[in-house]
Length: 244
Image 1 (cartoon, helix red, strand yellow):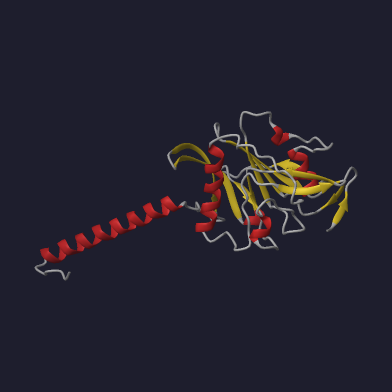
Image 2 (tube, helix red, strand yellow):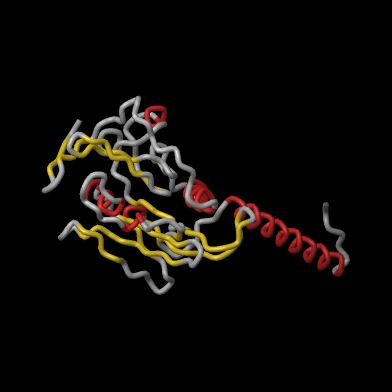
């Protein structure tokens, strides 16, 4: 167990007690699991998901404040490396004790009370306060799926507070720790048409989903078939019967 002191809290990193009752609430919105799965799949297919990384979805991330357990469950997060087996983090994850601090957490806005912006410092602290002041997560993204509005905040090392980031000319946000851009894309996946969060690499190339890779290969095969047919026609026109 390690600990640090803030002006208001003694923070310790302790494994969640086995008898701790985790909140068992349904996700706020039917779209949330689809959005989260899409973020993870493109990373995996692009080879950007290391073996010991973790991308929890609506899953408890824990800290102990003045002896009291706090659990927040971001809609999606990226943890570069865990230092324990996956079997040891089935119920929850405790940074510092079991691996890295997440480099980004994401919340997908719903019709609820806007707790994603809560900087309430008293116990139990709000999500914003927990991510910013306790975990010190470098990047915090808040996404409104219906409107497609995306806010990305980055921890300002000079003041230890989140600062709203400005996107590039493509409306993408650079996530330095992942060497990737994050942005909004409109289209269809899994019968859902709408706004999606997606990744682009440092060259601006979109990281594809599995269905897109399949379609890309289908188009490549079709182009190759057409090229072969054109070549065969040219050979026949020259009086040469092409080999099968």
